Length: 204
Image (cartoon, rainbow, N blue to C red):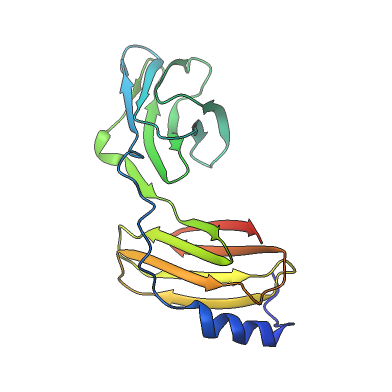
């Protein structure tokens, strides 16, 4: 994306109005805390998956170590059960991924010639960043559980960089950008935290 500033006037307005820390209500509701269980691992090259506590739609994936998606299932109910046969997979490491709008769970699994096994201590869970329009405001929320540095970069529809900042050692990050005098179009935020990068786009 471009970093040159084509609309300096709008950028000054945005920076003057946008960078206050919010006192918004948290978007991380307690009811969006899905539970993912792996059942019967170790009983041959298959396993059963059980998911409970979904507040909205979710997606389950099986991925290779390089990130290739082998299986993708959309889940539309509060709970889900499925049986997965991995007989066709080569021995090696794979990852089970459960994604909701606000959370992501990753569980590495290991496939041998005879069975599937996993270590629950290797499971990782993230709360995902949220970018949404509230009237004429662009609201950003992120629960930074690792409390490491978080870098935010905001772009306009043509790729112009409008704002960039790095926030250090904050658990809860909430920002509001006032778009009252902003042109209509798409706005994209790049979020870099915990060795990961997310992109969120909204249309104003």
